[in-house]
Length: 464
Ligand code: ARG
Image (cartoon, rainbow, N blue to C red):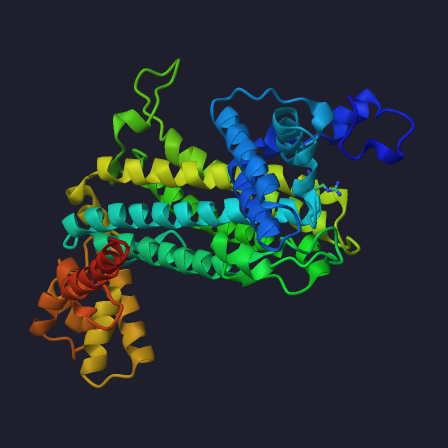
């Protein structure tokens, strides 16, 4: 078959090279955006009188037929046609004849592929942001049931201070809030149109790039034709934002794995999201969080692949850049599926409040409250810390907890400790003492939860 670019070639392409260089098996997913951009480009050519109205009409109708064929899965792919752009154009030619060749006036695959990719990514970003909102809502719903559920807050994976479970869950909602904002910023840079840059230098035809951009919903046009066809920053920063999302998901996943282990027994995961063991009948394994944790690795790898792909490439387009798609597409597919898995799993979590509460009491987690009590008596914090530490040591020796250690024993360590300390050393007193902005007191957490819910509700209203 003769190539659409075959004019200067005397030999046909090596068959292995055709396979080696084809991208159709992965870039086929760009077809809806490829055709949409082609239709607008074609209408612009007619508006600018670069082609006739009749020609444009024939091309647009032909493109719509190609679109329908692709939607129906009726267009066979062949490596000799390289990529999706060539498939569309060659099918168009088969349908409407040589006039199809006018579509590629004032355009190159270099500005075309970047335009398609940006249109596709723009939708992907919007879907990711929606997915983040859904996961946030799942976290908020669970948090609302657990404002007064206490678990041990940890540092170094050691019991540190008791906290509200809702506070812990809201920490993840905050991370996703930053992810959401980050994607919003990246979207603005994705949403600039390269089309009209042609191969690299612009075009002699009197095109109207602004009109095309407006029709395609782009916020503006890329200002430098050479940058436009060689820039993949937008893809890399999206991959980086996805990697960071996976960092967040993997931390949450890891906590679910830990919490659901019989070692802690804080939660039970829904059966539908776990699997058993083929040999140990008692096992219920947290596969979904484990896979989310594990899939972070491939997303980080894709980010590295994209950075390495673009490093030191001379301007402008290089065929290397075709390799941007697989890592990028797999990144998006992976992050989307992890978002979905997490969002659907969260409502099925059963929380064992009593176990969490018991664990929160272990490890003298109210020792800071004792020190804070002494500070309020005028003792410098460092000295108060020392006194509280000695009290913990005594508890360890006597195998009791801070709130069960007899007052007399405490007073032997420091006479300034009085009976009023008792009420401060319980877990709920400790949690509720932390009323500072951003702290874990029940009332503070409830207010934070309401404020967060308002943000999500306002957005729902704004999009209605
Ligand atoms: N399939 C190519 C890619 O994804 C499209 C651009 C090809 N341009 C070219 N000059 N060979 O990069």
